[in-house]
Image: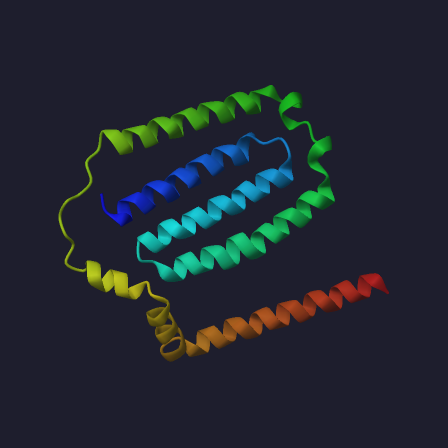
Length: 170
């Protein structure tokens, strides 16, 4: 076994176990921390697929910014008072059925179907296209105007949100 297969098994196992632990924990903060672990293991899987930019974006955007937002929302809402499954037991049954169907699909894909052994001739070009260097080169040479326009739109939206928030405080 080579190192790539061992790392795939390790990252895949961590992703599977952390996702199950995230769903089964009763404390939402602990669930959010298992979700961060899941995001980190997915970033490792993206690195094994030679998608460096997606791996970095996974860590920065999802494990960083989105999880901080989730934790703030969790702390503000205090979900220990929410009794969704005890009020509507049909939702729990529906979730279990969907989970079993997804598990059956995964077992089918892993054990019954065979991966393609044909080597794609454009594989090296695809690997090169996912590097941070290539994405940065394309972004700052061919797509500089849309990139700058998106930056200005985000700046205007941030200033507008600050102005609206300031009016509410006064």
